[in-house]
Amino acid sequence: MRHVFLDHQSATPVAPEVFEAMRPYYTEYFGNASSLHQHGLRVREALKVARQQTAALINADSEEEIFFTSDGTESANLAIKGVAYANERKGKHLVVSATEHPSIMNSVEFLEKQGWTCTRVPVSPEGLLDLAALKAAITPQTVLVAVHHVNHDIGTIQRMTEVGAICTAAGVPLYVDCEASAGWLPVDVKAFGAALASFSPHRFYGPKGVGVLYRHKRARLVSILHGGVQEGGRRAGTENIPAIVGGGAAAALAQQRLAFRQEHTAALQRRLWDGLKTHVPYIKLNGPEPGPDRISTNLNLSTEFIEGEGQLLLCDLNGIAVASGSSCVSKSLKISHVLGAIGLDHALAQGNIIMTLGEANTVEDMDYTVETFAKIVTKLRGMSPMWDEFERGVIDSVINPTGRGKSFSQHAADISGKAAH
Image (cartoon, rainbow, N blue to C red; front, side):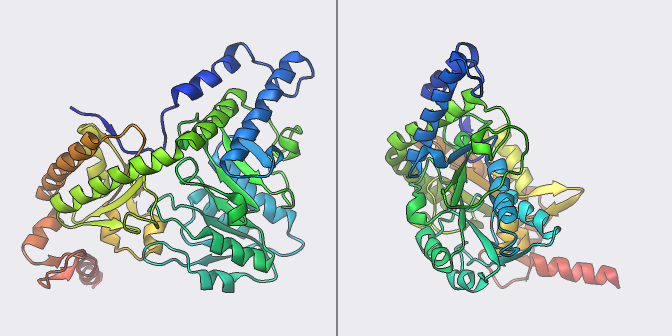
């Protein structure tokens, strides 16, 4: 059985060069960066180099604008809450896109419980931000706008220079979540007009346990983690030196291999999607078509009449690692808020999986995935009451309607209504 890893957005293997760069800082150079002796000085120099490597990846002016955290979630929390608390005398209003990552949305909801307000700007069916609505959402009380560079769920690339221009004209700082783009697409915080930006090296062949937050020197930010004066007093706690060194090495490696990564994954993405839509009937790509509006590593797919969890489990049993875009919580199937924001039919959102590509994937991996996934879909539909009802003409397809029956959502609503009476 072939083994194919198609969940690179959740994690990537640590590159050999990165692992070798980290190794001495576990055993030989083990000092604390806050110490004043030679052991501390040595690792402080390593911290400086990692900041320089990381700053170069995103075109920051100086390593002094780079702060290290434990991961992307902490970076997002620090950006959202740190700016909100630092600027609350000006106002308590935030603006975010409707499709931000949960670390951002949950940080916003936390602040809303404390008296802040937030405008969630709508997106198109392909996930592109409504720029007119963004401009209209900003008020004199707005202290931060948060917009991702690439969507973590459907791969949409936002028009960041236009977003940045709107924020700059309004005099409001912009925070850009680069979790899904850093290491795979060019990231230029100056071109974006970003006051803050964040990403995690473990998504591009670096280690877990380190996150990066870029902060422009004029952006006001207060610490949300209190203790020592590490990271310029904005992120207390002993630095994770091996992970930070690895993160810097991964950033340097990404700069070297960025063009190859884009070209390689774009070719595989096209082959995989062309194969799936040819061999799997009633399948839909969520987000833009492969091209300039979609990152080349991501395919977000809805396969009609079956659920995402079953697809994920059978893929895993056949050696293919993918992510499911839905999760079952307390016996209630919940769909991704991103899929809800783009207006995807609820039944299609439940049949959602995400395939994300990496450097090590091959043409043979894509062909195996297409062949295997087509068999998985056939097997699951053979056990699906929804597929049976579709074949009998009781319900119709949302993806390719035949006119023979109702949509699944309408059928379910009718059944619910009858049960209520």
